[in-house]
Length: 220
Image (cartoon, rainbow, N blue to C red; front, side, top):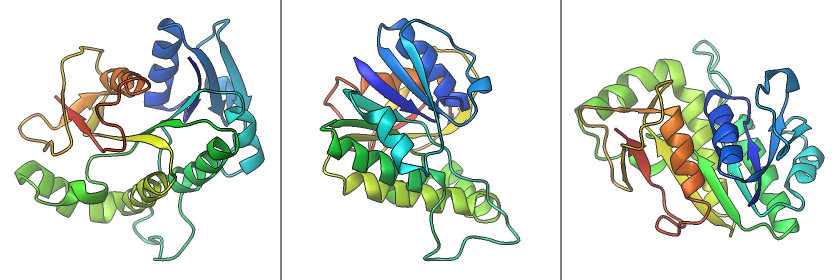
């Protein structure tokens, strides 16, 4: 499949690129800093740009069959939190440009990495989830989660064939293929998941309609 990966030099994005190429996909990696792209392959091409630049995003999407986004949110500043109504961070702004480019070029499949705790997943919390969302998120991750909420809203309204994937706490552990997935999944006693396993699941969504227009969480 001809696909574009956004956030391709991030911790999960790099694993996505490596796994996608290994599985035989023809990959376009969208990056801000090409020096961080450590993968190299005849089926891998690189587009350098910023997701805030709609024209560069469109260049990366044109002629593709699917898009996978592993965009991260901008860092929070606890002393100067983003105010309601202010422009979103890279996840939401980039996703708006990606969705628009996909519709212009007739690209339908959009697999988007969000985060557990975004959207309605912050409701009906178990004990580990409550600690994370009520204690850790407000001072340290407020803006990232606001950006993810907006990103998810943009994806839902896009009219595309989307899957929003919500990983739990991310680690740099190996690929195992042993993980839990579910729309109503809660953190439980093992609220983590390796980025390699997330990359595996994201790529599976390119052809699997089980979670089409749904928001599965993934954890161990």
